[in-house]
Length: 329
Image (tube, rainbow, N blue to C red):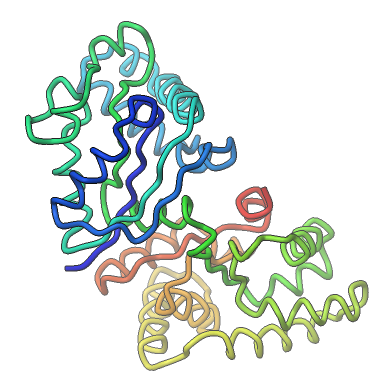
């Protein structure tokens, strides 16, 4: 199966003049470079790559426990933050080279070519095994990340997320606003500020907001007095033109609706169709302030289970406050 994955040659790999050797290893392994760039990593980029989300911090602590670090067992959150802070510092300490590699089973193949996380334990014939000169024991002793030359996406979901993050200039993040967002923007100043910020912000093509052009023209024409019904009608029309609404959307929406009703969640079929359209059209985010139905943990769990059964990727469902910090940075 043809796939794409993200590879980042870390500052130690660049500093040691190993760029050409590393690239040749992947190419000899049958992978093709789809995109490549050298860059200095910004604080905003690295904070998104190594987030401070609790589940991510705890996953790092689990790895630390397996490696025998007592700090990881004693204070999982603190250990996770320690690792994240160290990795951010390491990745911003010098230039890196980011690449999108593609080919048959690219994610698994790239990791096999890269080798085990600890260079001292990596197999000979792998990049880390042949070129690495650090080890986890020494890194732990010095309370720093292990210098292991490369970051390689771990799975399909990681690869998709990381490629969009590191190559946002060529792969835009696709966003769907719940139709009610524009109604809320009329009534809630904080939501209105978010909508204004996102629509007026120069994002260089990084963000693709469904219905962007239509709603922008309306707000520019009458920014202070759009009525709720006018904005809802306008945006409904805009997203219907931008999304492909097909039989798969209707079937998936019906599955959501039935499952939610069985769980006594009073969701509307229209809300289910919004989510289903976002899933089938492979969007990245749904922005909604509707915590009663669309944006609550029980609904999200139901949606994720149904999407997993149908081999669909679930967009992240976030509210306007999280959208502001995610998109307007």
